[in-house]
Image (tube, rainbow, N blue to C red):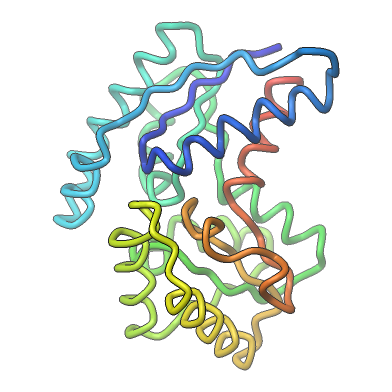
Length: 229
């Protein structure tokens, strides 16, 4: 089994899900009392969030690269960035380390392709929705991405940091998310990417009529596949 290095803390809530999904996935494949060989470097999310709001990607690059280097020095054979937004830095980091980064958008694109979906809605932080790093990986697989309008993007972004990242589940917020998804379906979306690792805390597949792609779960499964390859 290969050793995984998880860069977590972005937020700790979704990092818990990563740890659970990866260990459960290993156990389902190997049986008995098998679990994953992995390490977690948990960042202080306050530092990351401050840099995000200033769009100080160089600051976050230094934080994440430092975490990756420490995991690799401890024996990690691949890096799992436990947040969608952090993949904005994935290509830069890949150039500086000697182990692969298991990319969340590539894994998600593969799952969307299995469903033969051509147009997908993307929810996430403003950075994930508005920057190109996620959408380009989808486009490479022939998948068109649509995102909410500005007001809805702002609402989703604020709810992630003010509620979901603090483990606050608000029924009214859930209703707004479902309304946003309905609007995107009316614009042609055939599925929806829950493109922030906290969104699955709020929205489940049973809540929507179209395929919902839980990036936390998808990414964790890709990590399991690598570990057992």
